[in-house]
Length: 500
Image (cartoon, rainbow, N blue to C red; front, side, top):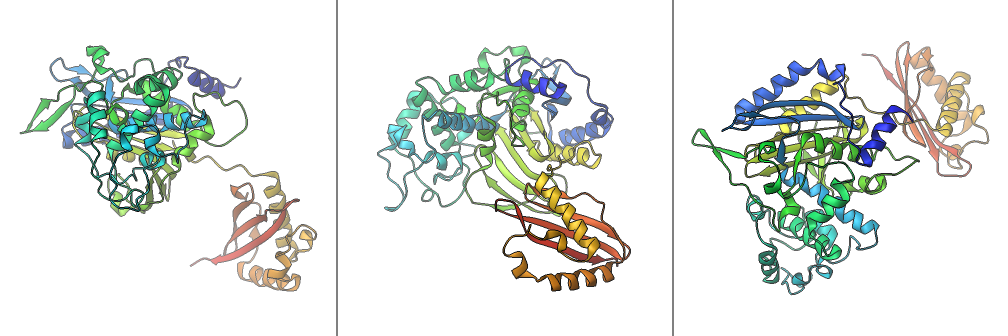
């Protein structure tokens, strides 16, 4: 078994990963990363912090700063336990998807099928749809944004939560009209999981996700965790730190109650990232790879996104929507990004997953609502600029390679004779063979001699682009195959771009 595959196999069955040296490609940037973290910590009055980079299925780099406890001045380590607040929602969402896979629920089921206390609710309009599990997953149930109220409900007892639900809740709008972040919705999902499994929500997450991944130090019963391992949570007020009370496990734990170490959390992210790309082979994780990838699917309430990084508002904007327990971002450089923050009394955290780079970054802190999104994105930008993070190339399928070879022949010959019998029915209708010869001759006259040896870059199994360097500029080309059997060519392009 190859080393990378061995590491992944060990991760998904919960075998502890071996201690590995930090790769030189990240370690050489240690001082620059240190500057980013210390500058942000000083500006935001952060007692302690840990940052991790997950790459190739493992914690490839970890950096700790400050202390986990101001009284004892114990330094933060990779084993220090932090509450990750709303980053817990990713575990809740995947638990719902796992139950869906087991046939125990459907995402478009009404939530009151599993939570009977919701059945007597008064909806805001007579035509309001009943709230579904999907609405809760995507924060589109019509509840009002409830930070910071929701955070303080962590300690609410299950019986008190039952009474709260039975009394009904106010709506800010009809369900499914807009995304509005509501911790209440994820607390209800925790109740759904508990009612279906007939066991506490935390039992399902701990037994079905944390244990298989080897996350032995993590869990929801924070008062049972070793005191000397826990980061004490602080808030900054009146120019001083004040200790936040430790909130015990309660009815709102499914929206933000999980406590993890950096070492453990890296195992979770290694598992999440391993779901990409789609592929054949053993699917040995606690949740199927195809199911993990579905966390990107959500409500179509997209908005303009400006990066959390320093100067992010001046960088290229993207689009953001809420999937299932993750914010899903389309970025001009990173491609698809899964990100989420965690704000909590005493803690702040941030995570970004880069499926197209096979990597993830995260940071955990022990100051109220001090979400370290800026340093996480700044470190990601540094790693990308230095070539430590690089996109995985889409494999070129045999069909695409074959038609690209034919395209090179077409260019050299100046005719489409090499495509005879291999084109879709639209191809000769869109441009005749005579006109192809004319356009090719005109384009070659404008470009001068070109080097057509550059490889094609696949967009998928049936489309790709290529760039050729020419005497007077470059050719930007496209190959698009048709959905036919046998595979045929539906479109071919040679666009000339001259030099200024």
